[in-house]
Length: 191
Image (cartoon, rainbow, N blue to C red; front, side, top):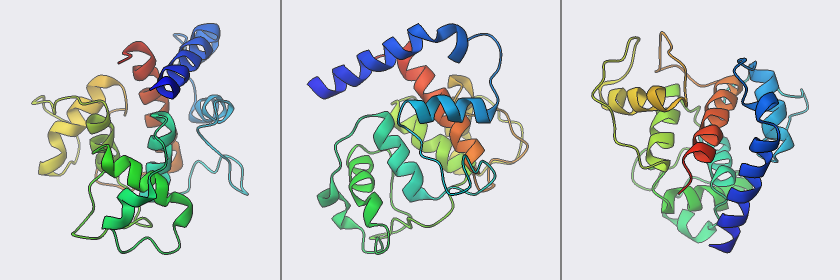
């Protein structure tokens, strides 16, 4: 608990100090948002730098969510999945975010860590993490029936922008924009 309060205070301090730069009325580009998140220790670059056009997998997003929420890594809670070989670096985050009910597996015993995460799946995880209710508002654009309420709630909260297709694989730029929106939301709505 003390660790959670500390991270919340640090985030509040960082965002209040740089609010005119980081959270100002001017919309930031995905690269600018990436640089801010990287400075906060939430993002790492790749050998290609920000690499905003590459796709994002479920393991990567589990790690980001664990960092945003300052969850302690919990490899034991990931033991319900039998498909994490090769993703040992993310096992603790996968377990922590599963225990926190942010993520579900894709099937019994399957997390599918290397599967590309779609924009609607990312929206669902964010809505669950913030314990928001799925919204009954209409969503323009292609979205799966099961995800409509989550996508609508994620748009309303500012996690994701309006898109033509939410069923597509999320790129790192989508992850950056969603993560930036989630961090802003968390600062403005502390628990």
